[in-house]
Length: 143
Image 1 (tube, rainbow, N blue to C red):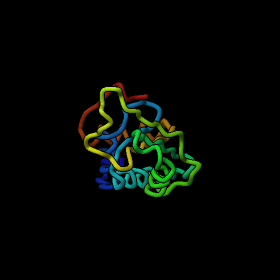
Image 2 (image 1 turned 90 degrees about the vertical axis):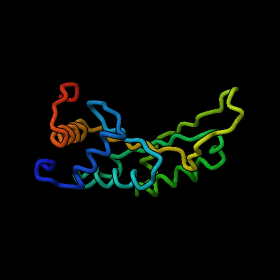
Image 3 (image 1 turned 180 degrees about the vertical axis):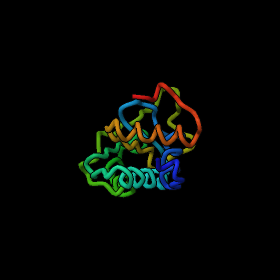
Image 4 (image 1 turned 45 degrees about the vertical axis):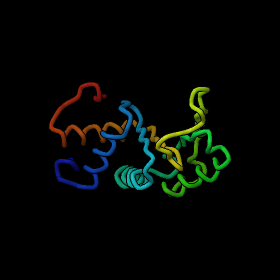
């Protein structure tokens, strides 16, 4: 309905999820390294589904050279998402392979952040918005 009404913020959130979110039927997983995208997506979730901070979880994906700064990076993402420490889940730290020469390309100073909401109604509403905007039906997304 919001997509049919042309609600631009709702439509932008749905399309952002379509591009960057996982396509699970029962929960929302959105991962990105851009702090503005993460902030926007959390605001989208809170605006349309009245989610409490404790309903939203974040997980950081870090690199081996982030280990010494892990707590600071986790706090950075909590601040970006405007969430309390209780929303943080155990971070993943990617270790170097023996072939990597311990040099990373395209360095992401804060790794990536995954935003998760385990609410079927939320992901189904987003899928409905995507299908309305895109003018198609995808049976795999239906409950």
